[in-house]
Every structure is written in C-alpha cells, then in structure tokens.
Length: 423
Image (cartoon, rainbow, N blue to C red; front, top):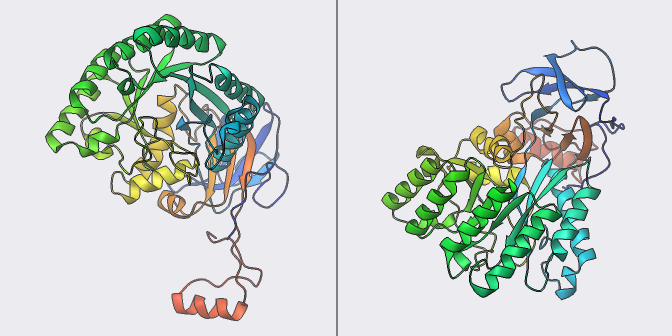
C-alpha cells in the first residue's frame, strides 16, 4: 500500500484546491472530534464559520466526507540540520546540503500534518553559524507553506571555550534564531551553562528549550527552579531518564517541574541522541508528569540520522505511541502533538471554531483512535490554504480472492479497482 510523498494541494477527489491566503474555501462534510458532521468556511487565514453540513454559502469547496477534521499538529522538537543524513558522509553537512535536507524534512513533516516546526540547530565548533544560516534560509523559502523556527544550540557555554559559545549564541539570535537552547548536561558546569542560556534569553526576549535526560533529580530540580523565572516560555526535554528513576523520585521531580511552570517535550520514539547516548528506548513518564501538574507536549525528534535511521517525522506516530503504551487516551495523545505542542512553541491556539487560525488537518478515519491507527490519507491546511495532500490506496490482485477475504473477515467488499483502506 504506497503512501505518497507530499504533493501539490488537491482535494480528496483529485480536483485542484488551492486558494490565495485571503480567499474563501469551504471544507464540506467533515467530521469533528465530537462526532458532528459540519461544513467549515475559511477566509483570511482563519475559520470564518462552522455550520451543519450543507448550510454554508457556495464557494470554492473541498469535499471531506469520510475525513476527521482536527487542529493541525506541530513539531516542537526537530533536528533539521542532521535530518536525512543516515549513511551519509561529511559532505552532507555543507550549507547547500543542510538547506536541501531541511527543506525536504520540513515538507515531509508538513505532509504528515505539522504546519509548524521547531528545529534545534547546533552552532559553534567546525560548523560555526553555517548550518544555522542554511536552516533559516530554508525557513524563508518555505514561508506560506509551513512555519520553521530555530533553536540555537551551542556545545559549551562555560570556561574559556564557553566565552566563544556565548558570543556565537548571541550572534545566532541576531541572525534570526527565536529560541535559545542547548544541553547543560554536556557542559563541565551544567548550572553555569543554564544560567548563560537564561541570561541571553532574557536579554533578547527569547524562549528557551533545553535538552536534558532528567536522570539526575538534583540537577533537574536546580534547572527547573532557575527556569521558573522565564515561565511559561521554557521547555525541557526529552527527560527520558525520569522513567528510570524510582517512582518516588520521579514524582518529586514532576512536582518540581510543575512548580517551575516549565513544559516537558517528550519523544515517544526515543531520545534524539543529543545527550551523547545514542537513540534510546526511554520516553518520559507522561502519565506521572501530568498527574503532577506538568504541561507535557510530544515531538518526533531524530529523523533518519545517526541517532535514529528510521524516523518518520510524523506527529500522529508520536501520539500513537503515547496511546498504545497506555500513557494517554487517544484524544489526550493527539492534544500532546497539537494543542500542547503549539502552546510550547508559543503559537496561537487552534480550534475548529469561528475566529481561530485555519491550521487544520483532515485525516480519513472514523474518530481520533482510528486516525492514530490508520491515518494514511491526509489533507493539510495552513493559513486557510490547502498546502499538502497525501493519499493512500490499497489494491488487491484478485477480486475473487478479495471477496473471499471479505466474507471470512466479515469486512465490506470493495470494488474491483480496490479502495482506500480507511473508507
């Protein structure tokens, strides 16, 4: 069953469905998460009206019969500068190649439904600011299709080498990085590293997004207390080490994070490798953290690089893993990659209601649980325009064999041409 790469936008029936940013578009017959079947009119990049099916005035239309319409997800933890480098050599990190791979990765994530991506980008060392500039250039070229924001990630910020790192971090912000971050755990002075990041963030009015394993409760508590002064614009993650702590220690750590008001961005697919330990199987204990009052969002992390050679960059896969592992109910899991992720990134709230931004994802399926299980066919709306469409068709080699299988499995029969697996 082939699942296509993102294509020029078309309606589910194949007709062209692009509209200018200030144009009007009606999404017809979509099912909302609460089960209602509605028409949704988009105008000026926002949801203008939601009414019962067939009730809105005629205009350019997309038939979403059989699709669930949801607020679009966002990707709060990407690494575009290393994405798609699995098996590549040193030449893969030239500026032109970084820009090309960033563009490809962002479009891949857009095809899955993420209309905004936050990418961590390493600055300093051999690369200097070249990778950062390449990612920023890709973001400018993708304007109108997706929003790409950048977290500048220096290696060291203390000691003699740290002075250069701090200067480069300030330069990165001047160039266009809107978030400052890094990994305090890898600096000889983790507290000093975090202090520098927070000071530069306060100077420039930037958000903060720090990597930490979270396996050292004392260090995590200190980091949370320091970051509390900038809340709610501070995120930490992936905090997979919390899952390895004794339960009582993990609970206390969760309480300290909640008191600081920071957001934890977990990676259900495993650690992104920035902490130096490679791709691990641990995910932060989401249910425990939520019970402690911590805001938790979820991201995809590594995308086909040295840390994870098989990453998909699909927010729905992250939500599926949270639900299938029993950390969250399907609706909560989807919220972790949509509403919670958008809030962690400082993006406006999205609802399928009048007045909210038209950042939407339509997925063929019968509800959120079905969407997370078999969400192949998708249509993505960014700023009121259809910007990506992915369709999937399952065909069988023999109609008679298909009929026999349908009878044996008590499934609806399909036409000789086959059909969408989610119809």
